[in-house]
Amino acid sequence: MPDIVISGTGLYTPSESISNKELVESFNAYVEIYNTEHASQIAAGEIEALQPSSAEFVEKASGIKSRYVMNKAGIVDPHRLAPYLPERPNEAQSIQCEMGVSAAREAMAQAGKTAADIDAVIVAASNMQRAYPAMAVEIQDALGIQGYGFDMNVACSSATFGIQTAADYVRAGNARSVLVVSPEITSGHLNWRDRDSHFIFGDVATAVLVEDEAMAPAQHWDILGTKLKTVFSNNIRNNFGFLNRASPEGVGQKDKLFVQEGRKVFKEVVPMVATMIIEQAERLGIDPQSLRRLWLHQANAGMNRLIAHKVLGHEADADESPTVLDRYGNTSSAGSIIAFHKHNEDLQAGDIGLICSFGAGYSAGTVFVRKVC
Image (cartoon, rainbow, N blue to C red; front, side, top):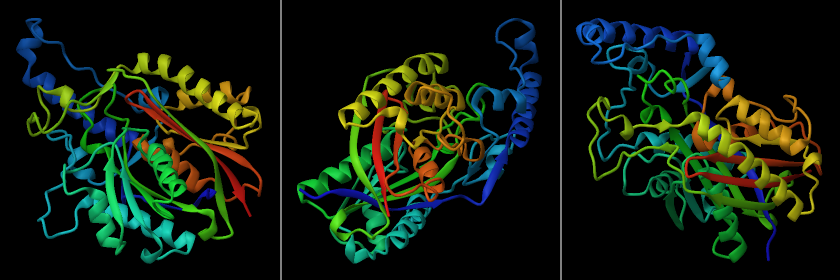
């Protein structure tokens, strides 16, 4: 049975970014417009006035200072508050394909691989821009990869679920090298009019190359073990689908966009994920407190702080649990992969770390890795 490794990672970052200050200015302008237009109804007690926000509130609530997006102009326009991403003709490369290909090429270059070396592509992301053809098949074609490809969605845990799926295919002999790509345009499913959540998400794409160790470069990461878990919950939900149609900007149909019960999610997910990490580490014969680094899902700074504390037994510093949340925002399944991609080169051979994601479902995935060379 082959040993499975991560041999390369890649990252695509959009060119446009929105600071908390810019985001709050546009949101507060919208609040003023809304309250003015509905002044008589507010005065009559028929509806409640919207409340303004502040950059300080956003950072305190989430730890986020800015986020990258595929379209800034539409989001900061108080009359729109939604990205403007026009449909491309069928013969043109789709936007998720374009993002995914960029990240994939970096992962392939890092591993010293060409299209001929790769057997399969899995696109693992929280939202696909169409039902079919699969985004993975389009990316496979754009890269010139033979074999097969398919899409999968486990919300914010998609990437770690994709890594275990890829590892299982290699272990079973159905592939030797599998590319896991996560193009996340989360700005498209966010309700930018909701004071409690409009600041959460950003856009990005990541790629991870999972391979048989026999074909991997000298510098790689052994996958020591993976563990997946799902528990049904309505506390994070998006009801948009082909059986319904949201209005152009989601007005009056807020459940067709991202919604969550944040306090419940915090209270229920933190102990679930921490327990899962500790139990899986012990099954693998790893002392969880000896983990050199935790690359955790980048959703909320408070959640990561508590999970890291429960796992390591002490307050984790930035070296033990690095964050990219402040600059990227929550990028759904890509968050932990961005953290891994940007913060792994300084580790020494033999160091053991953990890639972990968690989110809607509830879903959670762990990937324990050890640096080689």
